[in-house]
Length: 247
Image 1 (cartoon, rainbow, N blue to C red):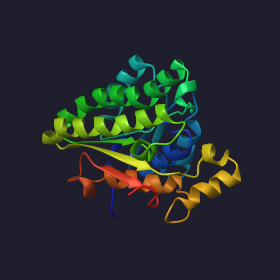
Image 2 (cartoon, one colour; image 1 turned 135 degrees about the vertical axis):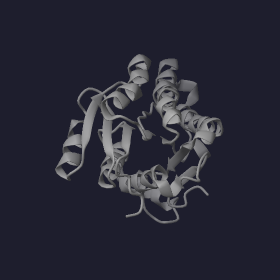
Image 3 (cartoon, rainbow, N blue to C red; image 1 turned 60 degrees about the vertical axis):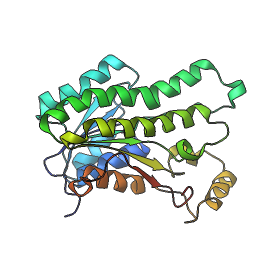
């Protein structure tokens, strides 16, 4: 089986729904033990679905903007599971507004959740990865971080920041066979996009050469590849999964 993750331990943030849930399920289907992280007990349903399909998983309640709790998470996983091989930094929020009307607290919330949390988690996760001389860190960015989008300056800044962060960190840890990569999804059919009126979804689809919105499984498949041994020679890369919307 390609992308065989048997024996690997994976942490996925924002794992309660949408892209994070799909990634957790797909990593498990490839053999990984999955730690599904989300606020409160929101990841419990994801873990139940993994167990139902024969996988091994646990749910962890964590607010990624709580730096103390997030810093402790990788070490706690290593203590329980013996290792940490894969980290998918997926948790994210939007607080969309034109810049001239944007509240500073909304800007700060987006940066804290989408960018600073990825820094906090990566800093803690690379310690055991460097020690075991292997690891995969995957940050979920966005096409908006590559091309921009009116009304999303905070979101675009946070997602673009992930790209620069990943490229710099990839150079720091490559000598220990730890890879750092980014997935940049385009418009994906999730709960958030389904809440948008149908006309807007049609308008989005016209911008996509493949003629459809992506699915959470499209992104999960990319995560499985980057987490696998087959991707061992790929680092500092931005994998665009956007149907050709931005090339």
